[in-house]
Length: 111
Image 1 (cartoon, rainbow, N blue to C red):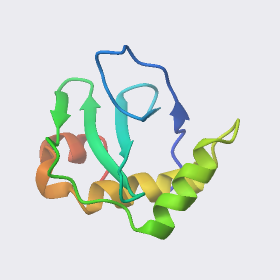
Image 2: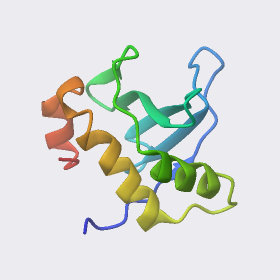
Image 3: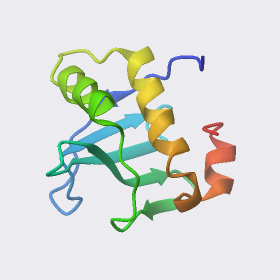
């Protein structure tokens, strides 16, 4: 089990379209997700300080229905369950790692 990251909701400009915006690692990493019409959570983009914004351009692998339900339920809470969101966040990276910059993932110890 990975150490819980300090993951939190953030508000980003309207130009950065996504249903959910999260940040972690002292605002060094920003993660955007969409809730698909299949009721699954899809990673849209991930930004890394020093690397820029990695767009997945709709080629993303989604979390499972069960994981997506947990994500949506928990995101509505005032305070996120950091351990749970760390697991979901790392899972979303693992299932999409071929679409994300490996050097950035390594620098931030996310793989």
